[in-house]
Each structure stands twice: as structure tokens, then as C-alpha cells.
Amino acid sequence: MKEFTMDGFVTKGVEVRGTNSGRMVTKFSLNSPTYNRETNSNTPQFFDCEYWWNGQSDYKARNIVEGALLLIRGQLA
Image (cartoon, rainbow, N blue to C red; front, side, top):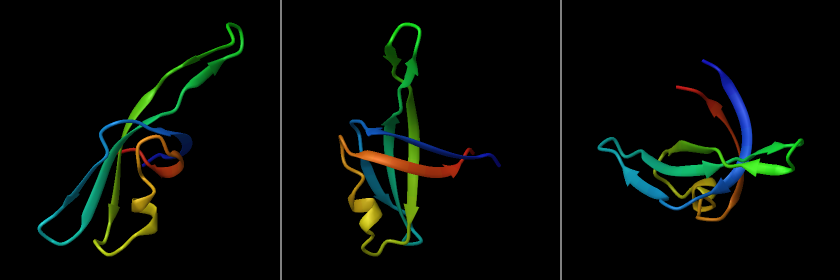
């Protein structure tokens, strides 16, 4: 699997769900625009992301809110 690191802003639609096994998943969309030096403009790029956690209180999951700036690291599936 390919690993990556990127930053961006959380957009609308943060959703938290539980599984039958007790794990939790937070689904969100991240806007990580690319900057074009020739035109001095940003092109928005949106990525659908999932953050899986064990169902107990998790400070990382609490910070995934609309408008938050996140630095994420993960694997492409």
C-alpha cells in the first residue's frame, strides 16, 4: 500500500458511526487545494477519508469537525 501525508480543511458532512464489534469510524471530506504558481490560483481537491478508532474517548476524533485544519497520514486503499 502507498502511504501519504497531506493537510487540508474538513468540509461538510462529518459522520460518526459505530460497528457491531464496538469500533467507531469517523467519515469526512478533506479539501486540500493545489496551488498553481503560473496563475496564482488554488484548485480545490476533495478527498473522502475515514478515521477508525476503538470506541473509547479519542481526542483525535473529537478534533475532526467542519472547518478544522488537519494534517493526516495514512494509506491509500
